[in-house]
Amino acid sequence: GGAAAAAAAAEIPADLKLLAFAMGTHERLGASSAVRLLDMDALGLIAAAVRGRRPPPPSEVVKLRRLAARQQREIDYQRSLLSRAVTDLGHRDRRAAAAAAAAVQQAVAAERERAEKVADELRAKQEAAREREVAKVRREAAAAARAA
Image (cartoon, rainbow, N blue to C red; front, side):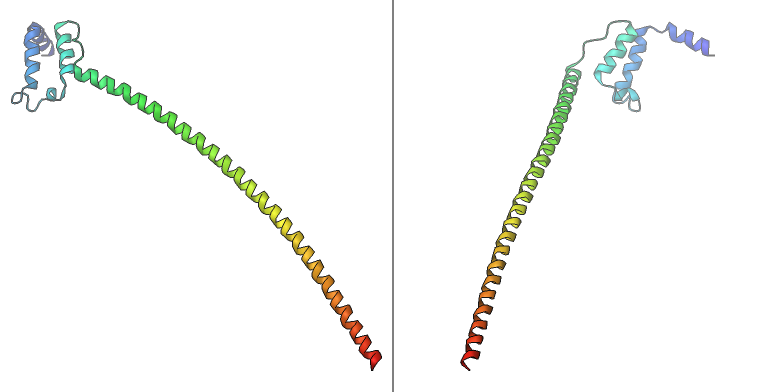
């Protein structure tokens, strides 16, 4: 069975095998054939293999696909560089923001210290004024007591 089929297939010339295969690309004959899914470059490679020849040079479509693939790799590489740069900038921004926050905190602390000093001076002046007022009232009360 299988040996006879193999022997019969070996007797069919390569050009006829190739013609039968190529019928799979025909709109009507190959309507249900998976051969219709192959592009011209794949068909050229198959034909060269069946004939025992070198494969044909790639078509313009394949050249463009290769070019597009190279360009996509370059785009991906540039995107990775950009992503790394954005990350680096983010780290720098965080460091700058942290430094700015530290400077603001330092300025707030200095202002708080100055405000506390001013408040202490004001309390001391108010206490001194109160003591002077109390002393004045006592002097007036003592003078009134002596006069009475």
